[in-house]
Length: 305
Image (cartoon, rainbow, N blue to C red; front, side, top):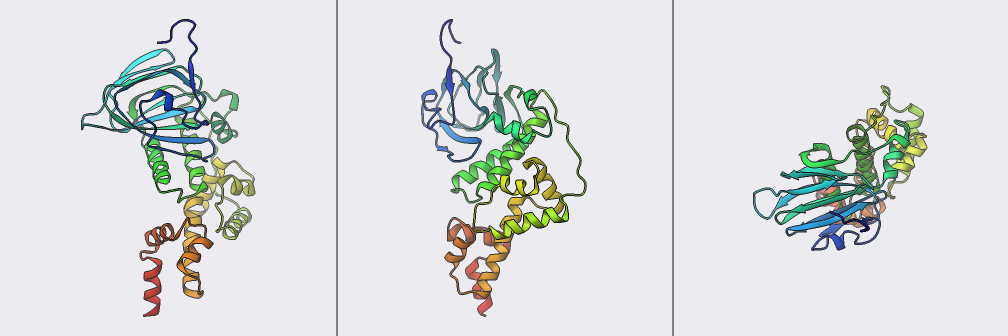
């Protein structure tokens, strides 16, 4: 551990390649441009991380090892030492500002998700006093299915080149923040119950805005502002009203509009993809087939028969 007079090192994931000085190899994948969160995927040999602190809250998740036997190692959190077995999918939570150190006894693959402290305060603003939000350190000794799902969704988004867009990232990070507030904070939030969803007028305003901006990367903060409520409450009430998340609704609207344009316009498939905010034709085709059951080209062939 740190000797007397030694300055503790700091990792700030807002800086490029922040983790590079602490691990033997650079991250295999890393995100950029995701507001309030940052993801890294690592494939590392046996190593020991020097004592440090994070400027952001960090969640670490073990993925796999070089052998079929799960890795193990030691972790120090805020001066407390625990030996971890680290089964596949186990997570550790390292709050911002506390001392941390760990080692791995074999080669390993893992992910790191860093979260701005301000995100928890923003999401929890109408649930708990922001000054009382304190994340609890958590050793890598157990799994969390919801956090694992968020890790997988963010990794898929990173590997696929941001197909889902900002709204998907916003939804995932808001869900994660709510989950952390509920399950890993010293003060439990007081959750309000809303049985009726969004009002008819508010829902109309939101859906009209979405349909007018299908060509853009609509942000959760934008449509929550139209509804004049926090992102947390907007997500809950929108799903109560529509039966799907805002991201799922927007994707369905884009596919519905694409079907109309394929049937009633002379636009090419590539032009329709660009007009409806998809990254390119291949990404449009992938989502179209997933929802409709056939590709855009196959739909045109069916129409011409």
